[in-house]
Image (cartoon, rainbow over all chains, first blue to last red; front, side):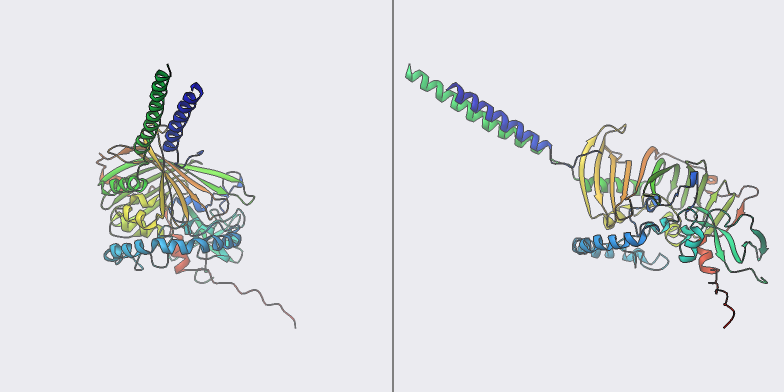
Length: 190
Length: 271
């Protein structure tokens, strides 16, 4: 009988402790281009600190695109399903304010990334900046931060300062992360 | 004797049964008491609070990973002092880890960004609210403004629109104030937020993971010195170019207005 009693008490205690532990658990737990210092790239899709990201870095972009496509394929349907109702709701909510944005509806063409998707975070690896700029002329992030050649010849024309490196001309402009040199047409007369 | 034993036996059976019942009840009470808080509600409360506050300033210590060509990650960091006066004043001063200082100022009419080291600034007219200016600055001018969404008066709507799922992790005391730790996902970013408990549900920490980018780099931010009782001077939002500073265009404008012509390769002579 003693054994029965001790078993009964043990079981009760175990149930109590297990139940309490279960109640406490269940939550997610766990641990929880432009050459600068030493030639390391500062460029990263994470630099934008955005809650959306349009692309990965230039380096490995092709691979990431394929990977993304694979990932996106499976999540897209789920995303569509889960967001269908909220999108309709959001469309209603934002309809009135949409007109104030240049270019129309703020999410047009960008959804689900949003207006602050990390298009500005495209990378330019050290030393490849000029080539990257030529390959991706619309990506401000791909322009070099420093003069593209050792001693560019400066020419002022029409209020703009042009810098000549061989046959190429540049002007200084403000890129996503700071001043950069952007390739431009030669100034008039050159 | 046997009757006595039977009574004792019955007594202990009853006690055992009652203990079992009590254990189950206690477990249920504990389960109810430990019910996880609503993570989305916590997140939206924070967004509502920030979006409705007319003026505020905060210091943000942030860092992000840059994945190098060899796959190694390098962390870059900076400190930003953000001052916001709704509807149309904004100032963001940044000190980068390499000592560079930059500035973004919006005065309700134009938005200016200045690089102190290079002594250059770019300026674009854009009359309107901070909401308008921030979207224009980031989307149209292609400029970087980390956590820009926090500045918007429609921050709650932005979160509702983007956040697909959000879950509660735990309550923590390790960040200086009691805070709720939540995790969530947008279509492309996994995020974690630590939000202060109480009547001022402010973000204390944020970690964003770009899960589709190579190396899954992170952006991390720690918020300090939140102040909702500010009366900044108007001069704080007025940009006066320092002597010798040169005005340059935004790169996106250059790319649109005066793009370089693709050069024809030199014709090979001969036959």
